[in-house]
Image (cartoon, rainbow over all chains, first blue to last red; front, side, top):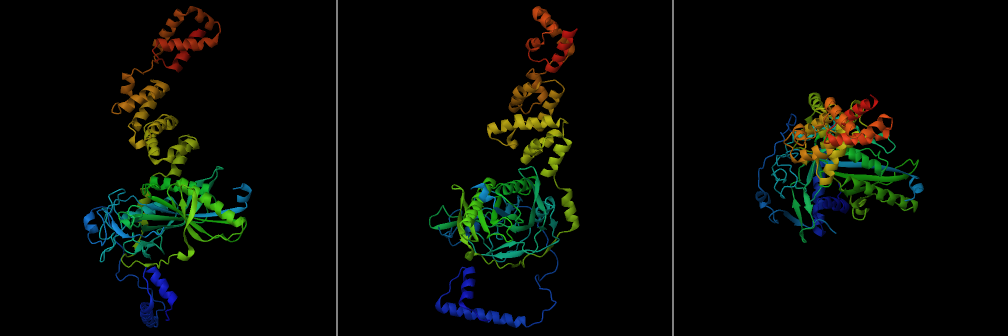
Length: 96
Length: 485
């Protein structure tokens, strides 16, 4: 399948990524290779075969509604690249 | 807006409500679902979206969904799957929200609302589905960063979606009030729009009466009270009709409500519409709701507002106005139910709640949960009044304030210590009346001669002589007998 700029731009937008120049050409080729492989899979006749959504049998077991604390706030924030004593810090996401 | 102009148009509104479930733990992990905790303290590796973690569904999410479905006469879905709704946002740690896409826990059903003309209208539901909440981003504390609090991430939600059947801002107001009452009576959500535990988005369009196609739809968000939903819809209807009148095209867009100005402002246009790329959640197996489970939940359902209304008006003989007033707030309804489980003076109980009790709550700005006088006290007061032991006025003016101060005492104890017990012993009363006749021979002669306007004078004298403890009804009856004898 031919990947054009508009498809790259759309997927990049959804992924919050940016591609320019050579990078954009390279990702186009990668995406084409991925979709060509998908086409190969599409050659298999799957008429009447239910999609395999779950790889295990059985039904969902529910969890009892009991609250407990596994980690502290300090542990939760420990690996964050940017934080203060209470919050994760991220670049401003509201453009106003 | 000129009513004639507005009346040319048919308004079409659909509402989406997100109700945060008042479970102990989150939808897919065991961290606490406690509102108002310090930021990022109710978190776990699962709700933080750490790699390698797997969701485990809270049984209450399913149960609460079924409860609401039963209450709304919805069909309960037997085979439930979960899906991923993909989008990137800083307060969505996994990069996707787990939700029900193809198999909402409930489909169909309706919520009845009362219209201003007294009629009932059923607002149809499209679906109710289970999903998880996102965290919270705070944009106004730090000038250079957004701050993220993930306490809310993974809190269970029910999304309740109506058919586009709501025809005005008033109907939207009634519908939201009904849903809020319902979730509170079911005890599945505290329904607090100010704190965001119940949120509402409105889809609004207008079309000329008789038009075949709906107008372009505008979504309005950010309304933090039922009143503001009404204001926002009202503004939006007027805005759209004005555009139509000027032949200006209405854009399909998302607008936010600006409460201080009572207006809506553009948030994002259609070109920014997200592509959520739903797909089946591979980490959660399907869940099957058995008939037995539905029956168990049905058996545990509390009385719902409309059922209570029927009992209050048909069995207890209350007016619809009084009944609705008592049902309006669940805790007050519960308080009333507790009183009438102890007395059959249903109207008396209603009058006490709507009069003395409500004015006390209003005066001190407290809720019934903070109110020290118990339903047992009120039932006892009613018994004292009904057996003519105390008068209505001394009950509300003297006994009630005393109970507020000493709720550990019984009403009878306090009535006795305050010396409020009325004299309804007819021999005693007859003696008092005779004394008064002797004391005022002139007046006695006149009233016996037919000058009945003196009855007030005699009643007053008897009351005075008895220290206010004579039962007025009994006194009146005895007095009349003695005048005629």
